[in-house]
Length: 142
Image 1 (cartoon, rainbow, N blue to C red):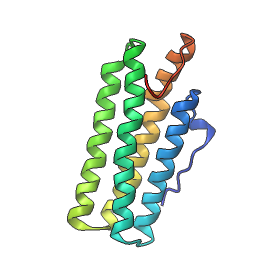
Image 2 (cartoon, helix red, strand yellow):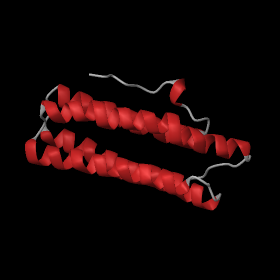
Image 3 (tube, one colour):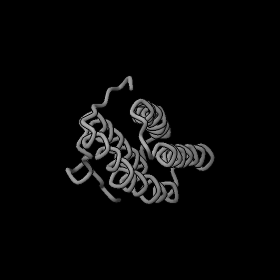
Image 4 (cartoon, one colour):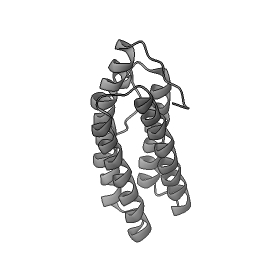
């Protein structure tokens, strides 16, 4: 298990986004733990459903703010969000078809965790810099 947890290296310096990232990372870690500890399917489905719903909420918050501030890398950022949503949906489908397999647990560790951490450190960090350089603030409404 990768045992990823929030740390200051993941902060993009925008409180609203950082708090949402903390929630997402915590739930990804919960899902990883549920898979490795053999928790029942209902718990795994509950966590996967939360992740899909919260991802939609979080990405929506970022995207509304990017549009409101004419963020120059919006299209590239949207494409990355689409990748993550597709990956998460595929993992959910895999679980529904095959159950809590070792392959699914490995996918959580490699695809979900690595993708999300890389996304935060790269494209989200650039968005945070854009906000700070332009003295802009984020809101959940956008």
